[in-house]
Length: 430
Image (cartoon, rainbow, N blue to C red; front, side, top):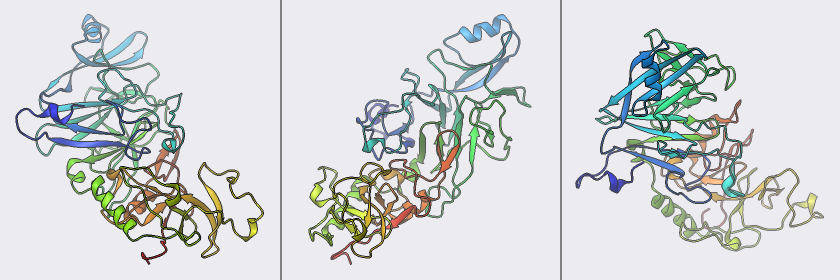
C-alpha cells in the first residue's frame, strides 16, 4: 500500500478505491499497526498502473513454456497437470487497472500482510496461531483506474518471481475458452450481501473464487480437489460490505462511497461522551459509571458491567445471588471465558452471564450513527442496535467447516439463543 502522501502527484487528493478491515481486532492489532501489518488497509490509486491480464497459453512442454516459468520479468500462472506436463498462462501489463495482493507472506509483492485471527486474542495474550491455514499469497484485488473504480477479487497472488504455482494436487481444469483455471488449497471465500452494507442488507451465500475470478458453490470440504458447481450468473466484483474469508482470517470490504456514510471514530467518541454525560449509576454500589475516552484507559471503579440475560448495567460488584452467597466473591465460574462471570441480577433476579462492557472501536463495522445501546453476547462489545442486528445474522467461517455468527470486534462466536441484548442503564438515562 502507498501512503496518501505518496499518492499526491500534484496538489490533487488521492483516489481511494476502498478499505479492507480484518474482523476480530476492534481497530488495531494487539501489538499495534506497523507497516503492512495492520487491522485495516486502504487501497489508493497508484501513481502508475501495475495491473496484469492473461494473454498467451502454453499447454505443451516446450522451450517457450520453460522460458515463461523462469522469466522473472513476466507474470505467469503455472498449472501442474502431472510430472510431465505443466500449462503456463502468461500475463501482460494492463494499463487500466491497479493490483493489490493479500497474504501471509512478508515478501514485497504482498501489500497487506494478514495472519490467522484467534477469537478474542486482543483481550488476552495477543498471540497468533502457530499453524497458519492462510496462504502465503492468498488473493489479489484488481481495481479499475477509471470511474466507477470497480474492484474484483481473484484467488492466489504472484510471488517475488511474479509467478503463481498450482501444484499437482490443487484443483484445476480447462475452461470452455481454452484457458486454465484452478483453486488454492484452502480456498478464497466471498459473501456479497444483498442491498450492500446498509440497514436493509441481508446476508448472501458464501461462494468460492477461482484464480481467474470465476464463482463457484462451496466445495464439499475446504481442501477437496473437486470444485463446486459453477455459478455463471454471479460475478467476483466486490460490493460494499463484501466479506472475504482466507481460511484463518475474515476481511470486510468497504467501498470508498460506503465509508463516506460510516461514522468516524470522532463521531463515536461524541456518542460515548453523551452517554457518560448522563451519568449512569451502579444500582448496587451507587457510584457513577463511564466508558473511557480514546485518549485514556478505563478506571476499574467506573467500568460498566452488564447481565446479558436481562441487559441491566451495573458496576463491578460482589453480588452473586441468593443461591450462591456462600461461594467465593472473587473467583470465576468454571467453564467460562476470562472476564466472564455468572450471577443473578439484583434488579430483576434473572440469572445469566455478568460481563464487562467494551466499546466497539472499529467504525467500519457500524451501519449507522445511532447511540451505543446494545451489546453482543457473550463478549460484551457495545455498539448501535442496527449494527448488532446486522452482524447477528451473518454466518462467518470458524475453522474449515463451521459457519456461525460472531462479534466483528473480537470474532468470538455469539450465544445461540440470544446473540445481543439491549442495555438498561440506571439513573438519569431512564
